[in-house]
Length: 63
Image 1 (cartoon, rainbow, N blue to C red):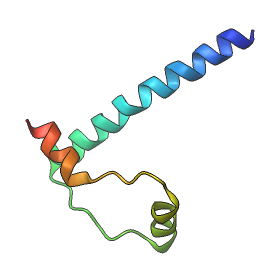
Image 2 (image 1 turned 120 degrees about the horizontal axis):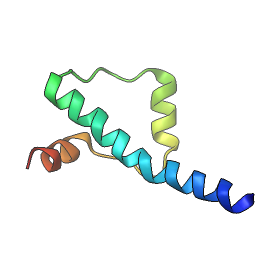
Image 3 (image 1 turned 180 degrees about the vertical axis):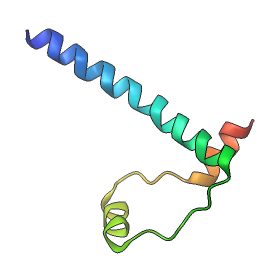
Image 4 (image 1 turned 90 degrees about the vertical axis):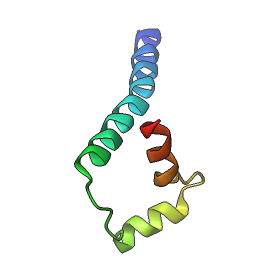
């Protein structure tokens, strides 16, 4: 029972980057403008150890 739960969690974690990539492709294709983050979003960003540069991701996806 525990093994199947663990496998399910691992599958979900492996699918997340694919979902993020799809969302980023959608944003780039639709040319959706970036807006200034809300105060709570800034706090969450500052608290995060790893910040992702959206421009870098755009360059990689556009290759």
